[in-house]
Image (cartoon, rainbow, N blue to C red; front, top):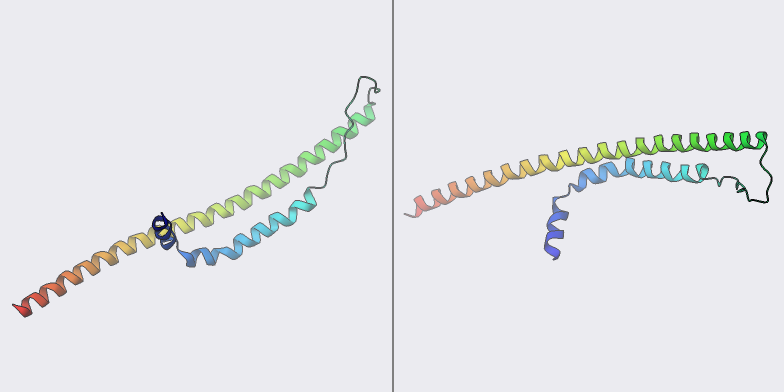
Length: 129
């Protein structure tokens, strides 16, 4: 069971992962630093009971304005998250491209080594016989 994991770990281009790590870390820190500032708990809104009075028009307008502010903050946060995800997706695409290139290079190296060993074997065979 450990062999597939080991072969999977050997395929990963760790150089690219390490080179992209600072930008991923920076984006994650930005995301985490925004969370406490944006996540201020909204003021509790009283739910109307059957015994409560009907809220006034001014109170309803204040609730509506507070809800709009929260919606705007959520939209801004969602835009920032989408930008972060987009940056991470670009980095992931770069990593996948690098992996694809490395696989192709590995195939050519294996083919070259195979041909070299076949040629070396032919030379040794002709020298012996």
